[in-house]
Amino acid sequence: MIRAAAYARYSSDNQREESIDAQLRAIREYCDRNGIRLVKIYTDEARSAITDDRPGFLKMIEDSSLGLFSAVIVHKLDRFSRDRYDSAFYKRQLKKNGVRLISVLEPLDDSPESVILESVLEGMAEYYSRNLAREVMKGMKETALQCKHTGGKPPLGYDVAPDGTYVINEQEAKAVRMIFEMYAAGKGYGEIVDKLNNKGYRTQTGRPFAKNSLHDILRNEKYRGIYTFNRSERKTDGKRNHHKSKNPDEIIKIEGGMPRIISDEIWEKVRARMEKNKRGPAANKAKEIYLLSGLIFCGKCGGAMVGNRRYSGRNKSLYITYECSTRKRKKTCDGKDIGKDFVENTVINYLERNVFSLEAIEKLVAKISEYAASQSAEINRDIKLFTDQLAGLQTEINNIVEAIAAGMFHPSMKAKMN
Image (cartoon, rainbow, N blue to C red):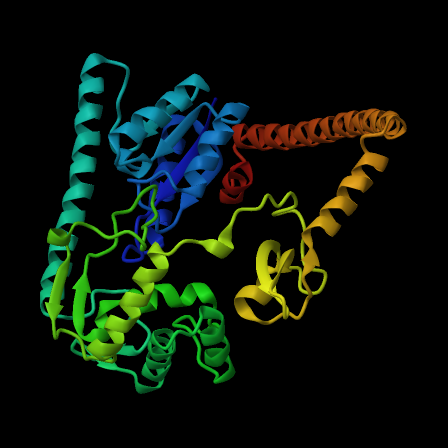
């Protein structure tokens, strides 16, 4: 009997979760008609088939090398992929693992005609997906030309009116004005974040402000009354880069399309300072090699310790340290800095004594051999346990098959067999 896995997917929150149930129902009926045993089910909810960023799909491809199943069944080929390159690539992966792809609604065989038909179906699926994206963008551009909200969370400082236009949220707008005015006056990100959090202001997601919350706010032209749409660079590998902008001719900009929160004077001061900081020499950012970067953590809050260079004291002495990243960004930890040379030398000395000395290496070799032997014994125990379980399951299956053959069929037997 052929053992198969099912893969089902729906692509957006506009499609109901029941569509996965409908796909699986059709797949199970197909298996019943064709004497196929369904052994695994993989699903992805609200995932596009244009990208391979689909956990269930990638797990199915990975498991195909384990010999658990010899076929993957989908309701339609476009559930597998709507990108011809990805489709060909992952089908080849399955083929290398001895697994074939079966579509319930598009029965194809190995004939030359089926090869042509499959290519046509994949091309049509990709066309449908790209055409749908184009039509959605067309509708969003029409909404943008009316200076209305196109989806997602509105920027901090704004709410969306029932007719889709933006209105100022006065409470949030106070935080926006504070950010711009303090930055224009020469204040640093750390001081701005402290004041915002002390006054109880929160980001759009309801979290305390951190330094990385401020950059996009200070660059957002909507605060000076300019409606912008389609600014961020296109998605790469399923992710959009909000720090890169598209060509100006692709961006919709409408003067006066937003209720203004920031004056032109403040805006220009902020832009001038950001440009100056962008071009200025990074005198206090000279690179150091931090050997323990990513390896040590704050003893108070568990946050990562990161490298830091600063000049401090009456004589402006240079201090090179590791500091708590939580303390640096959010000011919610009071863990102290620790000297770079002190902590690195402590670790190196420990490694020399306990890892790299001849005595330590002999001990390590003995421990590794002991661990390998224990793992081998444990794996053998697991194999015996799984073999016994498999034998028990096979006995149950055989008993049910014999009962059905003797005419004692009951619907519960089918569920048990599955």
